[in-house]
Image (cartoon, rainbow, N blue to C red; front, side, top):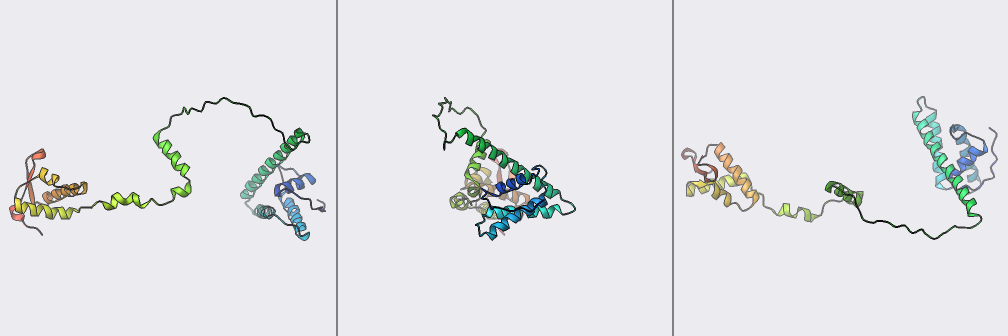
Length: 239
């Protein structure tokens, strides 16, 4: 290919420059000789530097991209180069089509800077007729919040109920039941449960009863809600 003598035309961007090089040297956009294209592109960028022209960052980014494709294509396995080259070809084709359509629109304008007309009136039914499951609506709501909002920690108020509730231990209820049995003798299951001040207290009481029965420190009599408990005489006392 003969050496290019640039007149340093002003291009809208790197794609405009690439298409100009491809058209000028009659290259096939579907089978671009990437090595030749890199040399011609970088030569133009150097000419811009010599002429003290302000080089937009987009031109330098494209130069680095072309050099990388050229480097990868020289490797024994160059599947990545083929993929990158195909992506570049697709972008060039889209840019070329946009240029063609822009040219056609300019012809239709017939010298006018803009074309306008009165907007058409369209009758629309704005009633929303679709039905959605609650989970689907919740997912849409979460997506609408944005990634940043979803990553924020929950407010302190979310933990108020958890932190403010008193956690009752099973061991404390075991001691409570043993002391009550020593004072009052037989205890009904109903009275033990009804004396609980919270759900945590109730669960701890129930687990304490099971532990005492399992350890043989208490015996149970009766059925259903009429169950009552007494301490075993040989295992009385609070440890």
